[in-house]
Image (cartoon, rainbow, N blue to C red; front, side, top):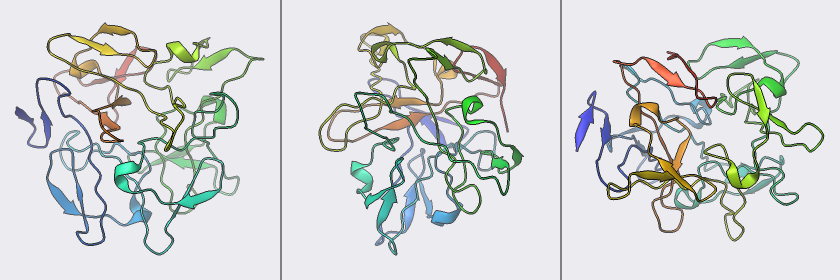
Length: 263
């Protein structure tokens, strides 16, 4: 095992652990970073729903902000309804899913406000709101105040059989079976599992797509930050692999292209 920039640890071998652990307890008010260390819990208001943010140093700590409150022990689903909060262990990393119809809405709803037509980026800055159609599914947004519910909209229509990539281009919709790491898929059963299994082994250097097929493993540097990985067991690890290098300061979009890393 080696340490990347003192924080992100990459373990060779099966399911090498470049993940994000979020622990929330009232007894021990700390959260675990991807390095395994702990720090005081941030307030729910300051947490970004999926804000992979650089916290001191170049891309050292891309975490998942999940809000948990004790005052109002409910969480809001993508349909706007509330249900009792699941324990951190049972939370699916992106289980904010509308299950009306067979796999027709495995996405995160984005709400837009007209009063303040801006959205907050993961860096904390603001920019004009993009239309829902142009929003990238990696659009991580602050939930406190006028940007309370800018979630991820992935639309599927039969009338316009295209999907938008993060580069803003369109391509024919992939079938649910062929969708890759953006595929929030309904697996039925308790805590219906909108996540993607990506297996990593050293014996078989391939990764599993959401269709169950395999392709050659991408290098950690080329992995998209939406790389949700199953580590076997009940809801054990729907985490995200975030690798950032300073040698190759680019990030890969879902279209396969690269652009300069955002701060």
